[in-house]
Length: 398
Length: 234
Image 1: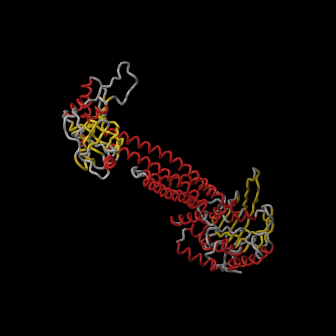
Image 2: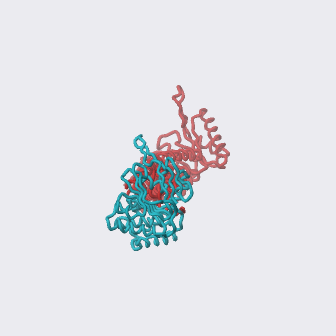
Image 3: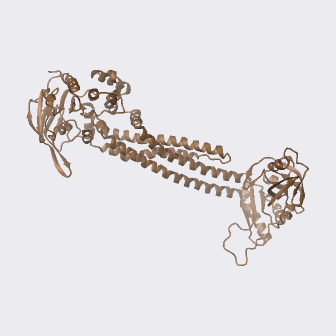
């Protein structure tokens, strides 16, 4: 009895019980689709977050005032020194630092004529374009100069430019923010979202002016571009050491891009695994379903099994036939589930194109492997029952 | 050909032993036509199942073709069922999902016969029982008599030495019963050893030798059963 003979015989038995077959196929399909779908969402979240961080540039260190890991309330401590423009200029003089840019942030109403739009206003310097790989579609970015002094130049994101000026050329026009007046010197190239900011829907102004406008003494962030990628750790220590020295207190946090990416990536991967684990519970349920169906099948087909024995089928042939049936059930279920899961993801991505939901290859392979395994494992007991059946008892009854 | 020596078989039914066969001895020669008769519970079906290697005796010896098979390994007995013994049942036991041809192919499938040969031999076997035009019909599209003829084709397609029939006409009308009996008797005349269990005196009367059973014992044997008859003898 060749493999194909066994397969054909088992397939024939499944086709002979269409309803029962399709129900247990559906059971496995739901399990596999859940594994595929949930891991795709988890993987999508991981890719989304890591690409957000990667968009920042891989040679980037970020300095921010205050300690991230605050532990308890210090009795007299808790004083956080400002992160100032002097600090920035000191950081820029460090030999391992290629460039650094400040960031002061607030949200203001930006007005042109009778149009007004509330957008994030970011104060920075000309170095920001280099550090964050900003490109300008028209005009230029903020001019170089003494950051303390400020200025009246403004660079618009594309959305802001379109909303305030329509088709008109905004270059050279005067825009008002509260009592402040700015001259538009550039419009950014379209870029999309990047970690908290929509670069199409914000404006840049000189940092000195921004700090006076927001009435702040501390910078929100200092972005530091490292000269050599391999010296990230040393540079981070340099920056931290310098700032601690200047503040005479360990009150700043300097994080590196890589550390954030790998931390988030591993968190998201763990999340994906957890989702896969939850989804596999439904696979186990489907397995029990298959076992149930096969047990019913064995009981219902007592006469058939008795007959097979009477015409000389060996025990191992009967076992093989029933195991093949179970494996076939779960494999078909696996394929149907794979199709369903991929289809659902496809539909999902059409609605949320920015979310890169893709099932990881390992999940697809594992899901298919598991579906076959589920059939074999949960098919063993029913198949063994079939072989142990007493042919005489099975054949006497009709 | 078939030699049962003091064979006994005891079942446990609800904890109480039921002695279906008590020290039964029977010798059936090649080409014989034997009817096993007796009231229900007399042990005639048990006898047939033991002869057919579906059941094992608790005591005594069963020798088939000079080989002790009563206590042989299951593998040996399965081989015997596959190649030397054909079964016909009261309830036909055709697989409803398979066509007539598919049912006839079944023994060859499990014996490892190739696909093309299976098809040819199934066709020939169906032709021999007069059902070649019905080859692609499923059992539920066949009459009772036709179903039993398909079952007979299935039983003989492996060219066995013995055909065992358990109430083969028990579920058939008179005319179909006659057809079926004539069919297997014709096969018997060509050398196939035939053992029929029945409680129908008309069917039993057609046999050359009638063995009466009661309470698990042989009580009357009309024939001699001393040795094998020649091939094709009448």
